[in-house]
Image (cartoon, rainbow, N blue to C red; front, side, top):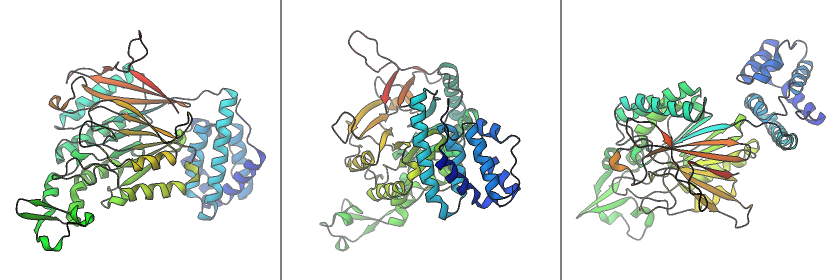
Length: 458
């Protein structure tokens, strides 16, 4: 049995919907319902035969009553889909009240689900990294091999989200970006997800070395102070010549990633200003929030290992997060490209951003770069139930074999969420034109065979 909507919540929701701008006319009411109920079978059934004529309040009472009767307001999946769309279209004066209502209803749904044993559906999120695409034919071959594995071996008929943690290309060329876009477009078509469900962050291979070189000009050393660390980061010595960085040209290193990849897939340019290089992706019907960050913002042809997260980008992201109470109960995932720990120099040295993410309630961190699947735990608190991030690395999905780490062929991860447990399925492909298989590398206790998956309690 689904829980009954509380009377106080019923009345609050009626008042909010009755004041909705689209509820002024019957046509507007049906237009709002068509948009808010899209893809929610239970809500679509609830609207059948509904009378939305008459005054605003009577129509709102009829709508909320029908939603409540069909369980749409006590099931987290339906609740998020229906109310998130309505929230985005209410007036500013009602938005904070609506945020409080969504938060209360979401908490009510969580309690109801745990108390009555309701079945929770599986959420499947694909994590790919280090695609390193080349020729356009790669897009079709890689798509076919991946789709065959997901649908045939993993019984994954649809994808709820796709996270790509950098290095879509090998040399940042137009052809490589066209291949990446073609591959991701084919994948979205076959697994029926929209661009809103794609998360993209750049890696060190996704910025242009040519534009990096063009950003450095010969300059006079007298104007630059060796003791000023901010100034010193803008210039280098090349023999007897001082090369000074032009900041406007320097930011264009990510121009191809923006115009050739981000715009075709996401419909908007990637920000050129470093403090703006973050993105939130809210998937309300899943209860998931993903934050994308750029760990390659300081990297160029002179400083190939200078990985990090811009501190102001983190501050702006967390400021935005505090202003969205409806995001509070989401499972929060952050993704970037470079590792926190690695034998290579190209790792993130400053871990301050991880502290801030953990304290803000983020639970998972996804990255790539190291070309091998790994899992680590970052503890902010030392208590058993303290704040922490599981740091999950995906291997390389498509790097040339010369760039494989010994013992680690091509890999990808499928994240399967059921309730408060995450299962990470790790897959491997050893032959370039072969099939994906289970990657049984996760050790168990003595006497037990390793498994191709591991669990994370959320």
